[in-house]
Picture 1 (tube, helix red, strand yellow):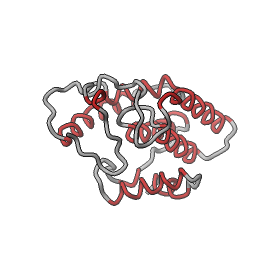
Picture 2: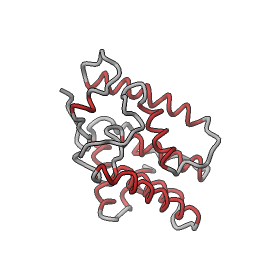
Picture 3: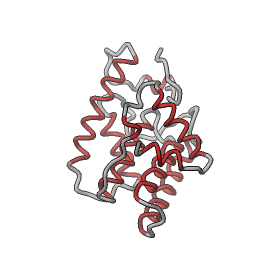
Picture 4: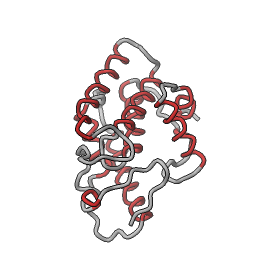
Length: 193
């Protein structure tokens, strides 16, 4: 049985059956292998020449790149209810709405680049399209929006790992909860701290 930190999404039995490496016995081993896979995805993303990263196809492709060596369902929308996120049958519609909104924000300069990326990140986490890895995926999506769409520096995300249950992760969760109430001030401060 895998133990979950505050803000983490538990996996159901069918999702756990999708684990590709059969030798994993601890959460630490899983975290290590996921981080290796994510690092490969980051290397892949650095070579991307496209600025077209705000679309459902790219969202799924990035998740698959981040987790394809770990989970059979990498890059595919979840098919179960979670402790966070919208009902799974609404994922595709809500993602399309998010992408359309973000395209409009950039086209009409509605928000600064930081705020576009932070708002996109928050809504992507809120939708929670995948069975696992949503926070890490949404953070990388936000960074890619900054880097590829706006040619600006990526976020620092509190300056340390958000994988562990620590003070920085608590601040991050608090900022997301404030954003749930349409107050993005703490999230905008956190992403550059």
